[in-house]
Image 1 (cartoon, rainbow, N blue to C red):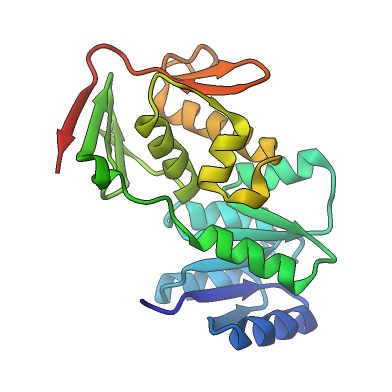
Image 2: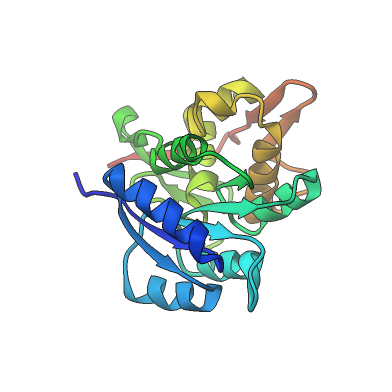
Length: 237
């Protein structure tokens, strides 16, 4: 198995040194960048599995860098922030970050978040159905390719994992905690805002009217239900 490679993006040299030394000792391949501009150049030239991205940097800043990465890549992104307000955390997730860690943080905490975000939900190929078509949506669960009305739609890893879990558990009411543990891991069972953000993003991408969803149905105070229409088509790979 390939050793995961991680890019640390922070304008503070000391933070980059500390994180780089700690992650290198854990066996990761680690590079660092002092700005969002440098990071985007490196991501264009090299393949990374994860980006640790500071939110507050001079230049284009963490949120804009995150959005720029998401326009072209499904790489994992963990954002570092000193902000604790819920709206700031949601901003980070809505920009495309998979996770966030609030400064000051411990290396065990950051390491745990990295491990959680490097893991992936097992492929749906075990159930035989790899391509799912419902309404105008076509989702290839093996290649993580999605199209709506014939137009390719980019999903982040977490967005696709949530969609995949919905598809595999269609027409069943799923509690928030169950979804969070399945996609993010056992340490995330109470992080409901993660799920709300990803579900809202998914609705904008697959629903004709996101404010009145046809597929991703909210079960108030409980969770969600993914409602397959009668014309759903499943194809085995």
